[in-house]
Length: 312
Image 1 (spheres, helix red, strand yellow):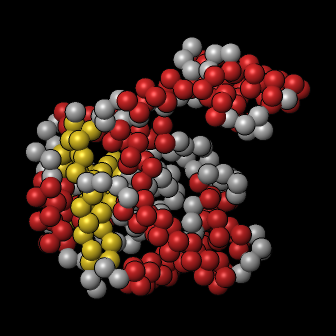
Image 2 (cartoon, helix red, strand yellow):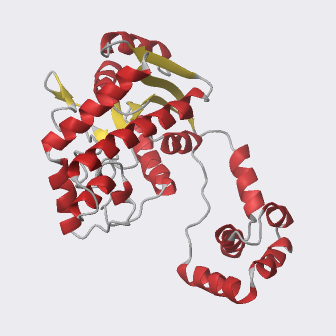
Image 3 (cartoon, one colour):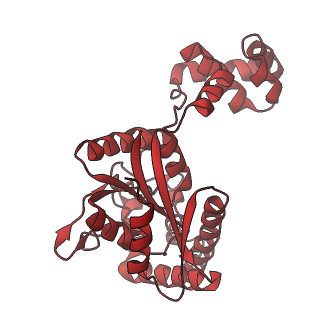
């Protein structure tokens, strides 16, 4: 079981800088855990670390899992786990400490668990099952499912087309029922031993102030131009990448569906709401150490905490 140090928490709390400091102090390399920083060309709106931000005192800290996908292609948590696990294994093999930095809780949880995901959709099989569902109805496919996976059939509703089809598809592709696959995944021990430090502010209002200021800074840095460039390059408005906060709202403004001021206000509100969800995600998790800033981050204090909790 390899060991990880995780730095997480809401946006605008100093994760990037603390990650660089921790890497230099503890002999580590950074592995990003941000579901939108994986896309090339999405830099300003995702707060992707710049070259200057990945250096300190003239020393560059390696950062992994940035710019690994085109914004026109789909990207899944299963693909992230596979690619990030390979990176972590390499870092560990070289005697370095993997430091996972980011705010996407789903990615981090799945990475620590080393979760075994069900196989990707098979296009031909999926089309066949969808056609049969549409022709025969959900009750007929649910009865078919119950013949080999009665537990899944009992949990699912006939109207839940996607899940009924998925349960049949998994069995047809692997010979293993969805019930057994899910149980086996839950029973498996975690792949990694992780020490987790979550950052935030003692006062929620201060966090929200920092988020609003970050959005203003992104706009000043050219976020609207970045969104326009992505659209001009063929990134679909309905694609996964363009659903990121900041991109979706400005794409609407560029398309004439709202004005820029309203879009910026909405970006701020949705960013604050997202930060609230990030806090909720980590506060219910056991074994998470919290570092709550007052007015500004105190990285020296946080680094001492990291040194104490870092896996050895």
